[in-house]
Length: 128
Image (tube, rainbow, N blue to C red; front, side):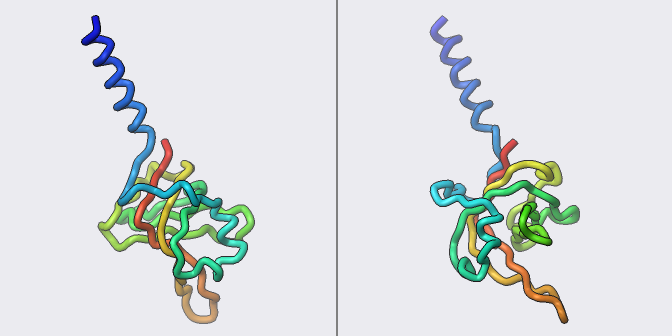
């Protein structure tokens, strides 16, 4: 009887811990801010390590090397970008809440367009 209860307890812990997909290191949720907050003054976060949260708007369909977070107060989503193969974000992340810890940097948009900002993550967590 005790062995059965122990097995059930361990099984429930295993299934509970699989509630999120984690990429890279652990996300630092002690300093999490919504992506909208970062986008109110993105220059002040440039080259700084931050943790943001948001809803995944889209995912790279070729190599899973980027995701974009929806930002209600912005004209364009905020991009999370890794080197190809470093982390592979699943297409199933679209519409889910995600957290990312990393460094904010410029994302050149090309001629006659202002640069945007992106996060180069060391840790990403997609809630299921």
